[in-house]
Image (tube, rainbow, N blue to C red; front, side, top):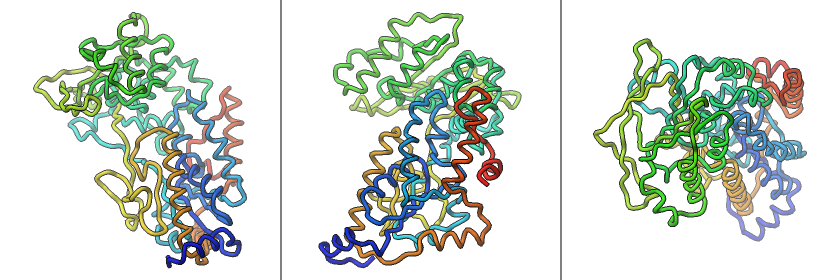
Amino acid sequence: MKKICFKLARALYSTSQNTEVKICVIGSGPAGFYASQHLVKHIPSVKIDIYEKLPVPFGLVRFGVAPDHPEVKNVIHTFNKTAENKNVRFIGNVTLGKDVSFKELKDAYHIVLLTYGAEENRQLNIKGENLHNVIAARNIVGWYNGLPENKDLQINLSKSTAAIIGQGNVAIDVARILLTPIDQLKNTDITQHALEVLSTSKIKEVYLIGRRGPLQAAFTIKELREMLKLKNCSTYWCDSDFVGIRDVVPQLARPRKRLTELMLTSLETTKPNADYNKFKPIFFRSPLEFSGSTGDVEKLKLCVNKLEGADILRQKAVFTEDVEYLSCDLAVTSIGYKSLEVDPAIPFDSNHGIAKNANGKISDGVFTTGWLATGPTGVILSTMSNAFGVAEYIVSDLKKCSIESKPGFASVEKLLEKRGVQLVFWENWLKIDAYEQEMGKKLGKPREKIVTIKKMLEVAE
């Protein structure tokens, strides 16, 4: 866009009622909604269109937050206010790269903000990863949270032991859901099909396996505290994993110090009950191979690691010659996600699974925020901070540029109509929302999520 005098630009920007600033946001998860919240507040005469590939909004809040964490989903109230702003429009059931191209959006809008997140599982790339009952954590989370693509997940919980590779919050969420008494889950918004399978589960023992040590554990204190307090469940630590750990506690920053002290206190005071379920975090182990004689996973080969590096919090795990074998009937890989290149016109870093950007800016008029920009790190609060920062960058950029007329949704709507795409607007989503809540009431739950896109579109109509 043509550069103009800063003072003139500010005057144009602050008084421009004739030329609307048209922005499209791709993705209706936390990053997309938080960015929209900031933009609609700080840009006069803005029109924001939030496109979502599913017929339903909220992304990770709907499909990633554990069903027994309803308080985390309270951010939806804030998102609702943004969606109901007269200058914001939600457009669901539109897939970038399939229903509409990146170039078509660039031609239609002054700003394209990409926030579509990370939806592909990272692979271990080890032998046996394709055995039955070796399942990515993201797929299990999608299964119990109602993500349409995971509704038919084939998971076998008929035996006793599960091994989860990874020690982040997603890994500990899956461990907690597997070990939580069914009576505590049945009144949440967990999907009915998952609830039925979990009600017959024979899983009694869950390992949480990390390649580094307690000082590098990725789960947060809140999630660990929940596990330690879980009904009818005992936590088993390995004493040798904590050798020398207490000596370095005084050197730690407060968040890491509190987490480490909680682990040490649990190690020293917990008296395991043999009749309870077993939660077993183990450290300094890396998976080498899954094996099984019948096509199902039966055993996990682990390498014993040692840590190297001067910085105790950033030490790297290095293989030793020692190996161990762990029997397991379910193996869950929870080693992170990466974003997809949904349109070849979007500059993309395939190695890191993110859109190429500098502090959120991809090119003139094109920005990104959330996990597509940063990789899958942090919690909703950090996503909010990042989204607000990139939104402010957009505000600043617009003040330096002239605003030429753009067609916005008017042109995109015509393209989608020609292509036979059924659009789901906010009022359509509210029909789905009401339907799910009504179905939930019949089951004593806050909602029963629709798990097929076809049914979502039927209800939206």
